[in-house]
Image 1 (cartoon, rainbow, N blue to C red):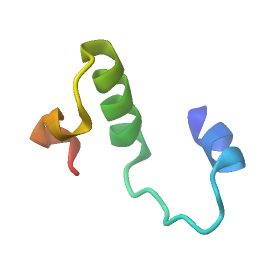
Image 2: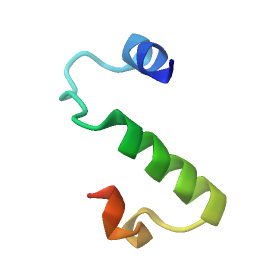
Image 3: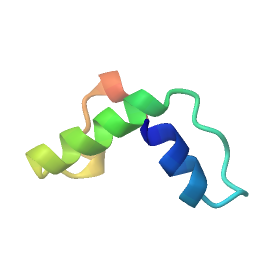
Image 4: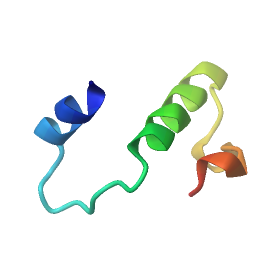
Length: 46
């Protein structure tokens, strides 16, 4: 459901996400924990 909304507002010159779900989960994790991006667990990839 979010994929269509994200694609509608993403700049067209950006590369495609290979795993959009993992990216969304990483954003949610960061917001819930108040951590810096470099503190993300390895399971979310760079």
